[in-house]
Amino acid sequence: MAIKKFLHTRMRVNDLEKTLTFYQEALGFKISRRNTSPRGAQLAFLAVPNSDEEIELCQMPPGAPSVQVQPDLMHLAFEVDNLEAFAAEAKAKGYPLSDGPTKTSSGSVIAFLDAPEGYEVELIQKARGATTI
Image (cartoon, rainbow, N blue to C red; front, top):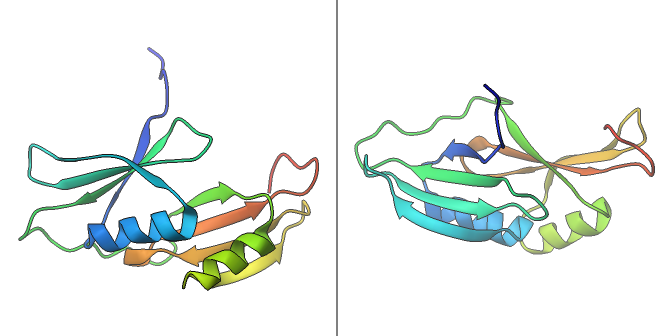
């Protein structure tokens, strides 16, 4: 038995439209498809640039418990070519960095954006020749 391929990561949210707006405006992601699950949850899949993997956003039907993300529970990390330019563009769109930029021991530079619902997005500008952060 072997895993064939990583397909997607699911994140539950309270406000699907607000979260979709963030990922589209701040990160430039595109919605690849939307549907309703057999349990009545609203689902939206976001295509991750230069990757086969997707992010699945799930808003449960009315009456379901609300999402309460614990601080520093998880984050999504994405590589960018120029963190300074990316951060300036995101800030101009209303999405300022919440932490960083910070240089790591490898010479890479990292920073964070606060996504809706308490999730975080890490942005990484790798040092030339670096394979890790």
